[in-house]
Length: 120
Image (cartoon, rainbow, N blue to C red; front, side, top):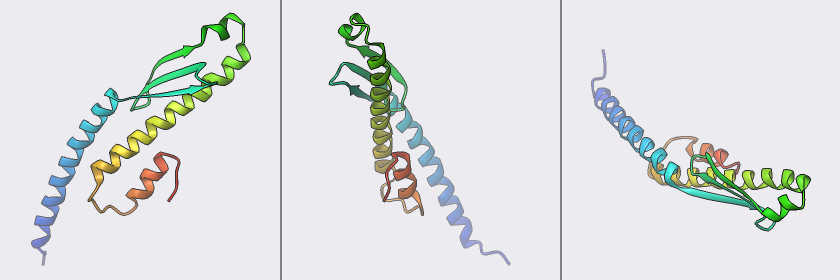
């Protein structure tokens, strides 16, 4: 026949999944308020992003523009964006780890490491 004892486990798992969904939504909202910056060329180019990776601003040293340093700007902008993006991913992974601490999900640590491009 059926093992009715497992129904309690399923109900508990469903409750935990709903709680986790609410926590994830809160985490996303918090990440939207967090700010990270990336810079390149000794601060000649700076980028600000949210913790979710949305780019908010780009600042280019006016002297670079005045000197017509197009090639340097073209090199520095992606470097600053990539640095800010990496910081946003790291922040996201750290917040996910704090959210999921104490939860034993096989492969979770590996998935979080992949989010940041790191390994175990």
